[in-house]
Structures are given as structure tokens and as C-alpha cells.
Image 1 (cartoon, rainbow, N blue to C red):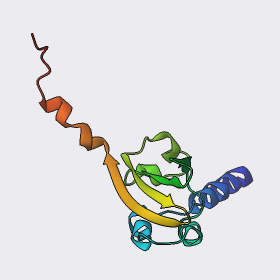
Image 2: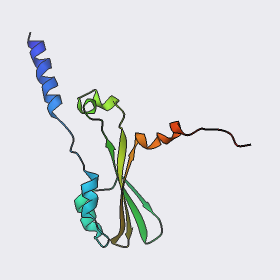
Image 3: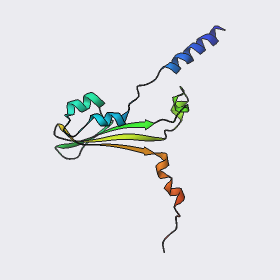
Image 4: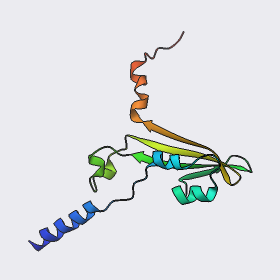
Length: 123
């Protein structure tokens, strides 16, 4: 009986834990051209991806999976369910200031057109 009680308590505690959720669409609204690099790092944190385009131009990428409604939130099971898409912020910095900020969202339904298209070889 004690084992069952301990197991139930552990499962309930695991169910209550969660990682912080990022809302990239609202985060992107905080960043405007001219925003300093320090403010970007303060608002959004370290980027998920970074690359130098030229010696004075760099890009930051922030990325977040779009979870499915219910089952992706279930502890232990949710990690096995693939996301339905993802969101991305692409920031371009020239020197120490943002020159452009783009928010993009990609969904698995974006590729549905492939099912409607007749794939025929051209002669």
C-alpha cells in the first residue's frame, strides 16, 4: 500500500512540473529595428541559433515547437508525440542594433497542397 501511495505522489509531482513556455509571436513584437543587442538578449535570452553573414552582420534564430493540444502536455507521454509545427524568429543585427525582425510559423498542414497536386512527369 505504501508503494502505491509513494508512486501516486511521485506521478502527481511529475505532472505538476513543466518547463517555461516561450511565446515567440509576442516576443517578436518587443523587437523593432534599432533595438540594441543587449535588449534583445534581455528580452529573448541567448538565441537557439547564431551565424555571421558578414563581418558586421549576424543573424539570431529563436525556435519553438508548437505542441499538440492535450496529449503533448501529458508527462512522460508528451515527449513521444511529434510537434504539429514550429515558430521561429529571425533577427538580423548590423553592428550592435537590430536591422530586421521576422516572425515565421510553419505547420504540418502547410504541405497539404502536395496531396492535391497531380504529380505527372512532363514529356
